[in-house]
Length: 154
Image (cartoon, rainbow, N blue to C red; front, side, top):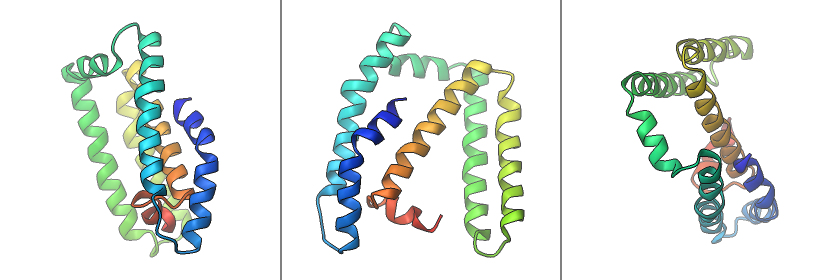
């Protein structure tokens, strides 16, 4: 919800950034995007998470990740993501869309099946992935460097 709210609040900035990027203007808009995200995260999302969790959410997250089983699952997921992103990037323009969709189905199975034994961790990972997706899409739409310019090919 937080990343969606940030994207909605930042949409005027993103539209302005997109128009300026199309006119090849050098701008400070990228700095504004990242600084407004950090401000939103520090002063809105963290206090809201503190209320919902009942304690410091960052220390709660680190204490949660100190459980050996969850740490192994997180390392496994990150490994699968990095390997799959590398493979998809190599084969993106060489492969038909139907085969590329099969890659993504295989990635989803490799990611979700092992984590299904930990439903709380699965929902936390899903929320984090959705937040990263929304923020990266906002950066792509606004053509915010370096994320937005690199993601235009996808």
